[in-house]
Image (cartoon, rainbow, N blue to C red):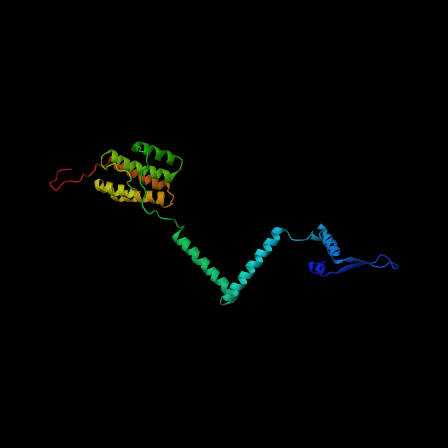
Length: 230
């Protein structure tokens, strides 16, 4: 018996026998009796679960949304499908061409942290990272070792807050034969540290070679107009 039937029921008539008068049950007791009967779990064994009912409501909502969108799209459902495929294709092409977007830093952070270390310490750290295949950290430490070595040789003024690009540009003045490699090294450092790029063993080996070359190269000191060294 449904709720509507329960609400519309006025009475239930029961017959006890052929010669007995019928028994009339008022509306309220009859509704309560019917509700107790329908609350028996046997009537609800095949009812969908709460999760299934929620999923059914969700898919009904999706179907209604798709129907409304296809009705407003030229070509109906086929036109909507073509538009969705085109949008997905454009998004995939942009992702393949541009890669995962990364927020570019507003300014290049400093090359060194707050704790000063010697060039030898940076080199030792670089070698330790390289031995474990941690190429990002190895490249970073090798770049710091190169710059710290130039500072220790008094070819660069020790300056807190110096960036890798600034160090490369300043080092190129006294090491002009390595200017191109210094610029590449600074770009690799920035790409790995701030551009979410991944370093490789060849990248580290290239910086190691440059570090050794800088150590063995005699600097070119700037001269005054009279030719006397500064």
